[in-house]
Image 1 (cartoon, rainbow, N blue to C red):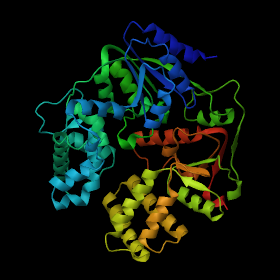
Image 2 (image 1 turned 120 degrees about the horizontal axis):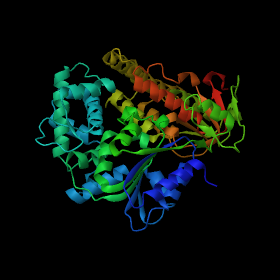
Image 3 (image 1 turned 180 degrees about the vertical axis):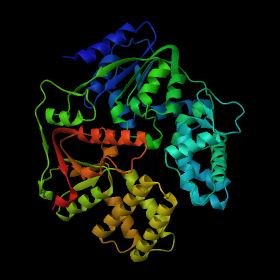
Image 4 (image 1 turned 30 degrees about the horizontal axis):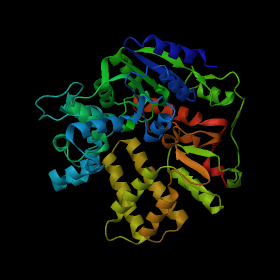
Length: 495
């Protein structure tokens, strides 16, 4: 039996079969979103061209198997990439995630290497916000000339520091690389898959219906992509939870749901019943999302605050989440030391740590003691560059603490052994208890969920309003992973 909330959504779809429209669905965590999307999709006529756009490939594949055959299922990146391939005659050999760094190496002077990572970060944010360089004679709808004020807005919003390079020189380099990125389409990175169709104003085929999942994480340039692909008399349904918006640091629009509603003049309906969590957990979630409701038949469940915990008390079905990476690594090695299987989600996190290890070690450092000295020097240098940016300093500290935790626990004696240890600990799949940052845990659920080092949430370094909002969202996401039991677990009590 469908809820009154779900029935209202189905009625909206039926009412718009013959007329255009837009709908925002505010779906709380565990609200039966997938079931609702599939049932609504079944109401779309088979002669209408429709697409479901998922947050990642895994969801696109899973939903594709459930959706009616006349509805495409893909990620937004895949949609943009398909348009680039058709209009620019590209193949998969053109994809290179390191495009921006390649362009920096090719076109900028040696001094730019000092701020290479910062330029790359700023370019990624500029693409998400639809900025185009000064040299563009005509800019496409939904794009904005990258003025100094707009560059500075991005630098301030995302705490990007030009370091020892004078700001105007830094921005000159960024604008140059943004231009090279637009004019050089023989290399395409993942940001380009969304950005270039908009920046180059490539003509897109059009859909009668677009269903967007995880709409709270849609960026400005993704929103423009949706406009490009929707027929003038089409319908768009954007499903999301503004309280699960936790990717602002990547360039996602923290006001995405409101902006989609404004651009498309959307109606709004709610999915407020949580079918995933027990009543006791929903009561915790209400502190962050007052409108969330427990299902009538939900179990009571439990919220626990143990004063001691043994590794042997974990089960392989447990999920442990944390705001930071370093505590997860420490717990992982405690489990490994007791012979308990464990894996830390986030191959990309592991890859990032390995890249940092190689960067710090350079070509000549192989001895672990010398590496540690260089790591401390790197940390001090980066913190000085971060100046008053406490959030960035905290991120630097988390990386160093993560490497240090692996080094201590693995007893690596060489840089090569340290890298091998990092590769072993990070895996998105594997036996044993699952450890994950909250960002990596989004989309997961477990009967028993542990919040490791709960004092780390919210982060004390969140100063800007949008950062504080996202920190509250992170807590909400962590809490609502629990199917039966939620456990608050300080690392110091685990033995």
